[in-house]
Amino acid sequence: MSETTPLSPKILLIGSQGMLGSDLLTTLLNRGWNVTSPWREDLDITIPAHLEAIRRRDWSSPTHIINCAAYTAVDQAEQESMAAMRLNAVAPGTLAWVAREIGAQLLHISTDFVFDGFASTPYTESSPTNPLGTYGKSKLQGEQNVFKENDKSIIFRTSWLYGSNGKCFPRTMIEHYLKGTNLKVVNDQIGCPTSTIDLSQTIAQAIELNIAPGIYHATGPDSCTWYQFAELAIKTYREMHQLPYEINLAPCTTAEYPTPARRPAYSVLDNTKIQAAGVSAHRAFSESLLEFIAKTDF
Ligand SMILES: NC(=O)c1ccc[n+]([C@@H]2O[C@H](COP(=O)([O-])OP(=O)(O)OC[C@H]3O[C@@H](n4cnc5c(N)ncnc54)[C@H](OP(=O)(O)O)[C@@H]3O)[C@@H](O)[C@H]2O)c1
Image (cartoon, rainbow, N blue to C red; front, side, top):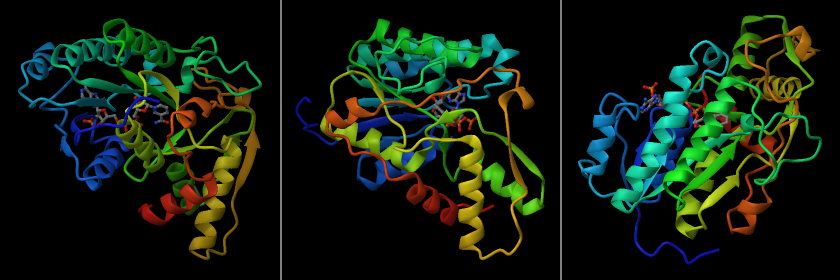
């Protein structure tokens, strides 16, 4: 671990309207840091003139640029590979170059989808990548472009994000439960649900501790299947609101629920490296899920 950050950071946060970005904005502001968080209309990272404006320091002189913007429609990416590549692969590379030009550090977010999911033990940062679909390929290319342009960058690979300010899996499951829908959920894909609030703390701590550049896995500590995730989310909601009606939830296989994009069957990420750098582990899944349910309007 390197020395801690000496001065109060000045942050340019991109994608602050998104699920992760909105919780991250709150986290950074709560630390009393100077944060500029332009909307996409004013700073679209696929528009060269907008990137040029960062290089010209029109957005002041940030010490850190955090990129939470991405093309995140995993299935749609199979039909829109150019759009996914432009936003997830090309733009992060240019952003890394711009960061280098103005002496800022880039912190960027990547995904478990860079792996094929054929493993049976947690993936480390040096495990071989092999994305199965366009989204994963575009994110992997983004990682490579970032380091090609700027080796001082930090990339956090995360997975199965959920937060109160976006469309996410537990929200969808609870909304279906409230409508009384009969649900079938895949029970043969395993991953680590990750709270956007906890990941935001990770990112802020990484800045405070001035951790070494590189890739870091940063996910919740517990793994489960999508079916188990749905079951726990609905059960927690039901108990919190003392609802009498049962859950109409059944497990199914990936083969029974085909999607345009293939997903890794096993995408548990090993968080040893980031914790060795001094960053705290995320809270237990049950605890962060409880907070999510209490804070979210369904
Ligand atoms: N969600 C997950 O389960 C998951 C899992 C692993 C990794 N990740 C990664 O985590 C990061 C955050 O994901 P998220 O779920 O918070 O994403 P999100 O909710 O889809 O938010 C993406 C944000 O990017 C903005 N954006 C889109 N195109 C842009 C552009 N051209 N220029 C500037 N901003 C643009 C969006 O603006 P608008 O609001 O205007 O559309 C939105 O604010 C992404 O890198 C994603 O790949 C997500």
